[in-house]
Image 1 (cartoon, one colour):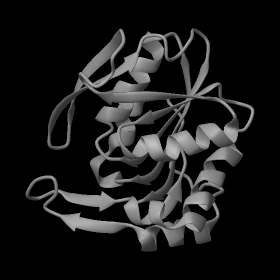
Image 2 (spheres, helix red, strand yellow):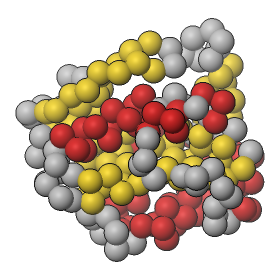
Image 3 (cartoon, rainbow, N blue to C red):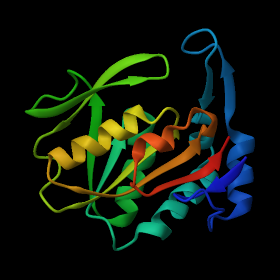
Image 4 (spheres, rainbow, N blue to C red):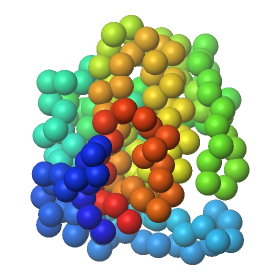
Length: 187
C-alpha cells in the first residue's frame, strides 16, 4: 500500500502513519456479500492516538481552506465530524435516502454491489462555500461522486475529497473527474 494524491504521485503524508493505519485495518471477506472484501476501519477508531494522527493529517492540508466538511454515511461521519471540529467549520451529513428529516437534494448511483440513493439537506451548504468531502474508503467512487454532485446542487464548491483508504483496483478515482482526491493508503 502507498500514499497517493490526485495525480497518483506519492504525497506528503507521514509514511509511518500510512504504515500504522495499514496495519490496523481489518479485511473481512465476503461482506456485505460473497466475493467482496470489506476493509474495516473500526480498529483505527478504537486507537485514540492513531485516530488523532489521521485527523491531524487531513487538518494540516485544509486549515483555512474549508467552510464546511461533509461526512459520508456512516464512517465518514466519525472522521469528518472530528476534522470539522479541528478546522472550526460546519459539518454536514450525506445520508442514505429517507434518513434526513428536512427538505433534501438526492442523487442515485451504482456502487460495487448494487445501487443507492444519498441525500443532503438543501440548506446544509450555502452557495460558494468551500466543501471538503470525507469518508473512510474510496471504492468504485459512486458514493463520493454522488456526494460531490449534492454539494454542487447546494451551490457549494468541492475543494477536496479525503479518504483513508483507496481501493485502487476499482478505479473509483476516475469517477471523480477533476476533484482533488487524497488517500492516505492505496491498495
